[in-house]
Image (cartoon, rainbow, N blue to C red; front, top):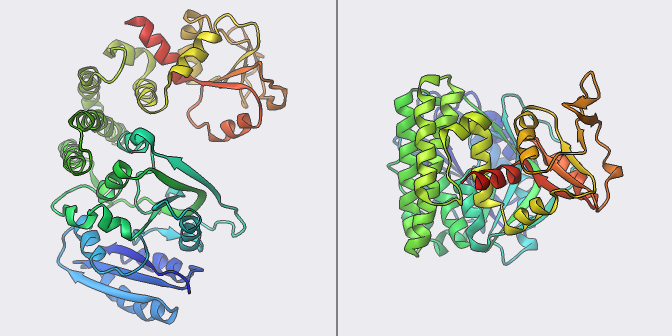
Length: 442
C-alpha cells in the first residue's frame, strides 16, 4: 500500500484561485493523500469552495480534514493543521498555487530512495501569473545536498537556498524529532517558511534536491511578500523576520559562537530584504541610508577579510557587491583564491563569458589583477568583433580544453554552467575576482 502523505493547506480569502489548486491536488498520481484545509477566517466564499471540493477530494479517495478558525495568519494555520495530520510524509502547498501531477509521487519516491534523509525539495516555476502545463515526460535528477558545517543553513539565511516550504516534503517523524510544532510561533507578521526550514537546516546532515519543476508559484498582489510596500511596513516586516530568525536559532544552535555568527548573517539579510523592496517599489529616497546600514552591518559583523565602503558600492553597484559578499560567505574557498592567483600571467587561454554590464565594470579589475581575457564570449554579438580591444566571439564550448579557464561575467549562469561541466576547462566567477580585488584594497 502507498504511504500516506499529509498536505497542510492554509486558506484565507483565495476564492478566485483555490479551485485551480485543488483541481491540481485531485490530479495527483499518488492515491493515499490526507489534505488538511485550514480555513483561516475567510470572508470571501473560500469556505464554500472548500465544502464543494470536499466531496470531489473524497471521491478521489483522499481523506479530507477541514479546520475552521478565526483569522490567526498563515503561521497559526500551519501550526494548527500540523496538529491534525497522520501521514508518514507531510508537505505545505499554498492554496493559490499549482501542483504538477507528480508533485507528491516524485518527492515520496526520492525520500524512499534515501531512507536516512528526512527532507526533499523540488524546483519551482516561480513568480508566474499564468497557468503552467509541464511536460509529463520530464526526468527527475536527484542530488544529495550535504549540510556540512551547516552550509545550507547559511545559504537559507542569505536567501541562496530554497526559501519556500511549499516546494519541500519531509518525513512527519522529523516534526517530533525537532519539536517544530511545539516551538512554532503564531504571533508573527512574516511567513511560516523560517519556522519550518531553519530547524531542519540547523539539524539535518543532508537534503535531497529533486531537480525538476514540480510546483508553480503564482505571485499574488495581496500575498504577505507583495503587500508590504510602505517604507515603514517594509522596515517592520524585515525587523520581525530578523527577530523571528533569532528566536528560532536560539532553539536549534547551541554554541554561542555559532549562534552569534548566524545572527550576524541575519542582520546582513535584513538590509538586503529592505533594499530589494525599496528597488521593487521605487522608494529611491531610502536607498542610500540603507546601503550605508548594510555596509556598516557587514563590517561590524567581522565576517569578511576585507572592509566595504559606500565608494566600493558606488563603483561596482550594490547588486554586484552584495552578491560577492554572499558568495564569500557560502561558496568561496582557499582553492578559489589559488585559482585566481594561478591564472595570473598564465599563457593558456583565459576566456570571459558575457559582455554586458558586469564585464564593463570588471574589466579594469581584470587589468589590475593581471587577468586580461584573451577573448570574450557572448551569445549576443555586437556590431564589431571586439569588446574594448579584446576579441568578441560566440561561445565555442567544444573548443575548451583542460588548459582553458572561463570567468563567468553573468548573473543567470545555470545553462552555461551545465555546458561547462561537460568540458575540462576551469571555471571562475566574477565574485572570485571581486573578492581578490577587495582584499587587495585593504
